[in-house]
Length: 414
Ligand code: CTP
Image 1: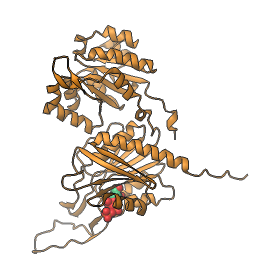
Image 2: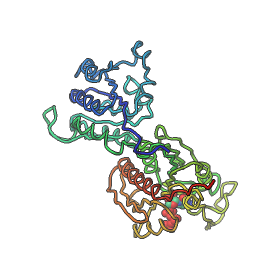
Image 3: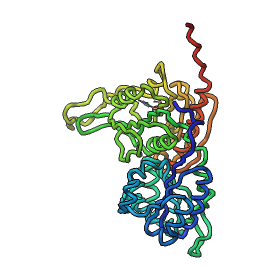
Image 4: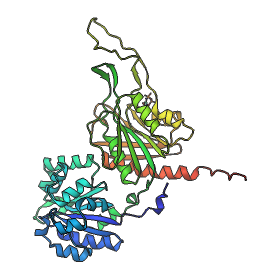
């Protein structure tokens, strides 16, 4: 495993500039990123070139600016796919309302949108637009979609706008964006760590057409998988049936039942450094699955259930166990129950939250209480994408702490 400290911050940044008055601030951003040692390749949309000329960005970046998907000479030098592969971070500043919409719908109608679609690097956006355009339900829906896919938003800030109005929609200052890029979380604290995570519900069949399941949407687990990938981990995501796209750069294995999930988890354990059980695995399953559809022949039907395998406990019990992390969904006494679960299943870390009809499941936001044997941290109510990033930052700290604390093997006598 590569040590976290040896992992440099991103040096190859693809800076997308879209059409908006804030485009002029992007020139200052290029300058600041280069001061920190980054190579910056600017890609402008056609609308951006109406605000600032490509020549300005060529001068500050020291590289020819790319504007056209159909530029034969530029494509021959570095095609859009190579551009997507070259980038360690794709940063779009300013990101206009139109660009958010195009990205949310997966359009590939210009060089910048195509590159964003083709890259496995993290995509960060610094939106800039009129406050009403930002507040519009269509823009907010696009922002939510992008957030679910692991795209990170920086800002926007609130204040006086170029159009004369005051409100939310101003692009963050170049200095703030640069600081976010070089903040500790982009130091990739999980660089090279092999991480296996489960997400979503399981389905336990009763007959060929019916099953027992639960209300998990998988959103939290998928957000954690994307945040772990951004932190540099090599991520395998073992998912129950959910309606979510796979975060780019994450290996996904789909399963239905707790037994299948158990099998895939253990198949992925060789060489795994971290296991996160974020799936809402069935605790009980039908003792047998009828081979034909159960008919309504009586007034009453009793279901016979048996315990499903506890995947998390089985991972924690392995001889060469990874750093093992569980989730606890509790309706009462959250901290006491979660601490009890932490000890009972011999976990390194547990993420607890309160659940109920209006909490946690199938929502866009969440809050978590993180507990480990001798500590705790509360993460406040926020979007699942932001929460996942904070969670991964704490997980990385705990992971490195326990690795350091692990006694060294005595040298073998010759
Ligand atoms: N889990 C698991 N396999 C199961 C059930 C749960 O791996 N068959 C994992 C979940 O992925 C999650 C944690 O265990 O990380 C949640 O445990 P939970 O089901 O809430 O706890 P239990 O120990 O079963 O306790 P209780 O249901 O009594 O709250």
